[in-house]
Image (cartoon, rainbow, N blue to C red; front, side):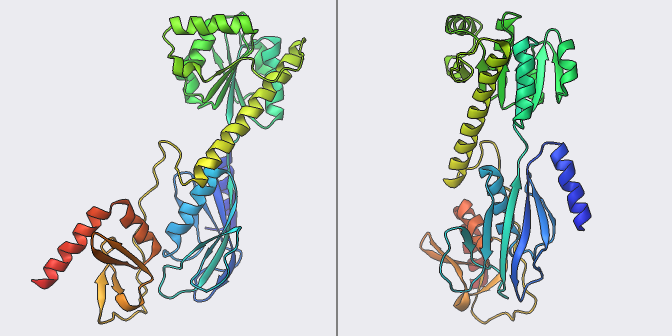
Length: 352
């Protein structure tokens, strides 16, 4: 894939508000087919576009890129069997290819700004739309009267309050600033949506009354925990502009809190809920390697592994299992009983 094509793909993903990560080779030591400056793009589905070396390191690169997208932070990755002192800011992996070589990569994620949905066309709602866009948020709006919203350059404007329609834009945060215009209908639709948090512009007395109304409308108490009122910090606001400023400050604070929580989950090795990590592909077999006398058949990809020089070994179920690369070892660890049965079945066939 040419640099121009890669840039075009980046632009399409940005316009579609989809996450991706750009992988750049910053060191390449032979034997390797990559070169310094080579680039590839990993999209949110785990597909790799471009070229940063052979298939042996592909699974490592894709998973590292997906981790940067989950955490929202860049990282350096080194794939090598060279001895050396560990570096705190470099994620090290063993080179799975028997031909060795060294790859060092820099992975930079690009994440779409979270979508924020503002409910209402009050002066506070209009000002909040403007301020939220200035904060880099993707702003949509819904209201009974949409004409005042038309000139604000919003991503989308919806008529009325429908949680199913809200979920089509996948808002992370919803700000309810109806202030007397269908408050209950707007708040119920917001709470029935999949938004992570709902912020309500209201006095404490009104917020308490609306919470009670939501319980009567069948909103579960657990979901009410996603409701935040006041919508932002107390700044002694009086005018619609000042109220909007406090509410947008609340949006920014919640956005950063959610990002920090996602980064902490990624650091702990947890995936985003509902996101499946794709199965690792089989490793490539270097054509230049002669089959040794003492071999073990990798139960994951079927490659013959030289036992004496195997670098990826695991003891499980009283048996030692040998792998051609770290990717196959990781795949085995996901379903060890399945692959151990394959290995034992092959052993029995060889004996007969």
